[in-house]
Amino acid sequence: MFATVFVLLYVAHLLADYPLQTDHQAAHKADKSATGWVANLSHAATHVLVSAITLGAGSLVLDLEVTIPALAAALAWVGVSHSVIDRRRGVLAWMAHAGQTQFAKHGGAAHVDQTAHVLALTLAALTLTAA
Image (cartoon, rainbow, N blue to C red; front, side, top):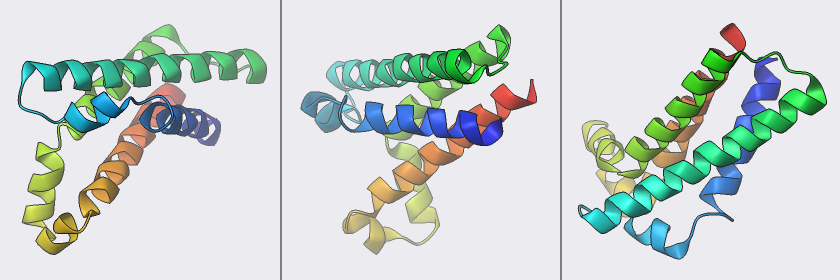
């Protein structure tokens, strides 16, 4: 069941991060301003909503046994982790600590960002399937 839940969460992530993310959200979600927070939180809310839809559809179609407390915890984690990762401070701090300043200058932050999201989705899938 882990693989199924992970794929559902990953599809939701791709939908929310690419076709459903507005230009405004993408441009401002890491800004240190009220506008940045609104863009960030609305983008994270999209992730939670799309994840809930894909998991709900998966539960109906595939008869997944997901408890409400595990679902609530996983969706909260999806929203919070996505918001924190997209603020970029942790990503850039990690890259500086790991000696990846040149990689960061040449677009590497987007790759580290996506890797962090996949890790967060893995933890969410583990939460849902371990319950």
